[in-house]
Amino acid sequence: MAWVITHLCRDCVDMSCIEVCPVDCIYGYTGDDAATFPNQLYIDPEECINCGVCEPECPWEAIFEDEQVPEVFHEAVALNAKITEAKDHFEVPDKIDRPRPSSEEVASNKTKWGYTG
Ligand code: SF4
Ligand code: SF4
Image (cartoon, rainbow, N blue to C red):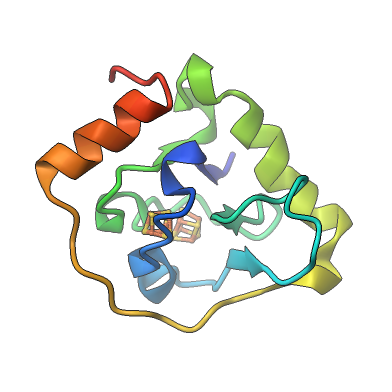
């Protein structure tokens, strides 16, 4: 069991989640293969202790428990797990303060990815 960061994080990368993770298992990709690892953060499922404290911190509502990941984002489970194959190219990023998205922006981002939840 682990938590998963989905497509809703892509290009938003607010980073509120990294500050609360007690085991620092939320990573950014530092390599140059953006086709495999798009611009979002990733949770290492082998390090995640399933505490769930990151989920309410995400203003884009991008984080789900693996068994609760919506079908439209199902590939995110394997994508997060894929970081274990390329760990040398991942590191815990520094926090960047970004403005909180409005509820309209959050809804628009969900629509963009075909998520109606
Ligand atoms: S808080 Fe949400 S949007 Fe921000 S980096 Fe974490 S998962 Fe991505
Ligand atoms: S569930 Fe807990 S351990 Fe796992 S990524 Fe979120 S804050 Fe970190």
